Length: 360
Image (cartoon, rainbow, N blue to C red; front, side, top):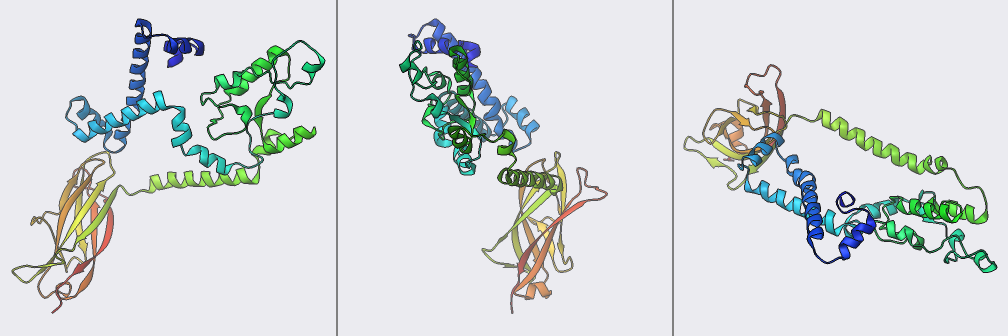
C-alpha cells in the first residue's frame, strides 16, 4: 500500500523527512484510510466467526446490532490498524510466538538464510585491483542487505529471531555481486552443515538432502495427522450440543403434593445454519416429569448458530423410587426436530446427570 501511494523506498524516506505540507498530508491520509479499510476487513471481521454472519451483517448495516458487536469491531480494527501500520517489526520481535517455535524446531541441517562470512570477511569498500584489495573479502559493506530488510536487522551478524526469512537480503546482495563481478550467494540459503563443508572446500548436501530427513518427515506426518483429524472431527461433529448444570442451592424442593423437584440450567447449542426445534425427554421416562418454568411443552426453538440457556425442572412423583432415594441417575435427551418440528430421522444427543431425592 505504501509503495502504491507514496512510491519506492527512497520516495517514502524523502516524504517521511520533509515537513508537513499538502503532499504529505494527502498521501498519509489516503494511506491511513486504506489501512483502515484493510483493518476492518481483516481484524474487524473476526466478529463474524462468533455468530451467524449474514444476520450480523444485516444488523450492522441497519445499526440494529448489539453494542458489544460494534465495540468489538472497533477494538479489533483499531489494534490491527496500529499493529500492522505502526508497530510492525516490534510485533514480530516481541509479540509473535513463531520465532521461538521456529528456533526450537531448527537443527544443524535446517535451511535458513545466512551470511558466508568466510567469503565476505574482511569487509572493505570496492577499490582498484591491488595487493591490499585482494586480501579483502567479497563484502563491500554497501549495507544493501540491511536497507532492504523489513525488520532492520543485519544478517551478517548471524541468524536472529527477528529474521522472517523473506529473502530480500539475498536478492539485494546478489544484485551487488553481479555489478562488481563477484560470485553470487554471499548471502543465501544454507545450513550449519553446509557452512562446515564450504569452509573445508568439501561438497555440501543438496537441497533435497536437507528436506527429506527423518526429522522433517516425522514433522510432516504429525502435522498431516493433526490436520486430517480436524477435518474428520469437523464432518463428524454433532449438529447439536447440550450442557447441563445442576442447581444445588437448594439441592431439591419438596412440592405441596409431596413430589420432589430438581432444577437444572440447560445450554443448547444449535450448530445448523437455520433455526431448529429441540425436544427434551428423560430416561427413565416413568420416573421423571420435565417442564420449563411450569410449562409442560418440551419443545424449544434455538436460533441458528446460537446458544440458548433455559431453566429445566425435573420432578419425581411422591412415593417414586427417585423421590425417596438419596440420588438417582438421570439421562436427559435432546432431539433435533428440524426447522418445522416434524423431522423424519431426528438427531439425538444425551447428557448424564444426577437427581437428588428426599431420604426418609
